[in-house]
Image 1 (cartoon, rainbow, N blue to C red):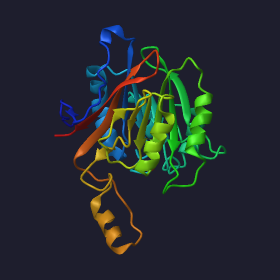
Image 2: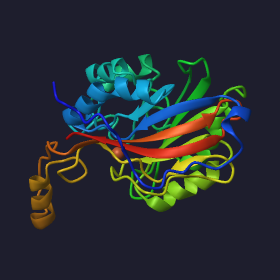
Image 3: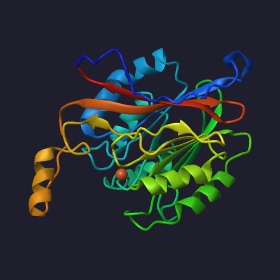
Image 4: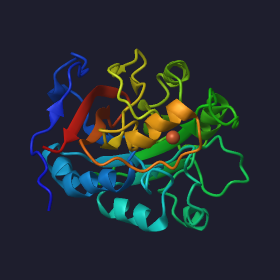
Length: 288
Ligand code: FE2
């Protein structure tokens, strides 16, 4: 068994609003969101570390983006089951969700695996899941994908309106994974949904941004949570082939990198009664 560093690295800039004393507030739901899990190194650190993190940080709900968990491209039924067994309640997707064709038959039967809600509606699966956390609190997870420098799917903003209208009103805790390329589209979505959801967290670019904060309406936001996997390459892939492709432009086969395995996450502190975010903190775990 690999030895993982027991201490987590708390990045600078954790955003915790200085409001009234905790004792006077309603209960808090703690959500851990794990950034894009890349290949077997990403799955490895999740399966090794997650149970300990959940226990020590008293986390109620774990959500992760899993669209790169099969060798960097897609997700298989076996891997989805492995990640659910590791303690992840809901897996979100993105542009690579269909890379492994066997997932097409799996996703309609397993609603905790999402594909973006603004994909054409002839696709199998759903972009929205409504469930109950281990502490009994109802929650919803919404998965959307951007359109700037990405496939021209349906409008993610209007899709968000449609999906949010379908969530039962008693469900106050709503988490959104916005899988998008550009910082501008992600920031725009944060403002668009501010006050209507508990958090809008970006995925897809694999590099964590240092802009986590709570918007005025009570929505936690971060442009990109970063990825979970090897960081000695280029966004998780072996750098040799990537560099060659940048130099010669020829088709290339990319393999998952191997070293400096990190797990980039965000820890959300949500008021159970209102669904408003009380805090957002970047947490990065890594091997020695
Ligand atoms: Fe992606």
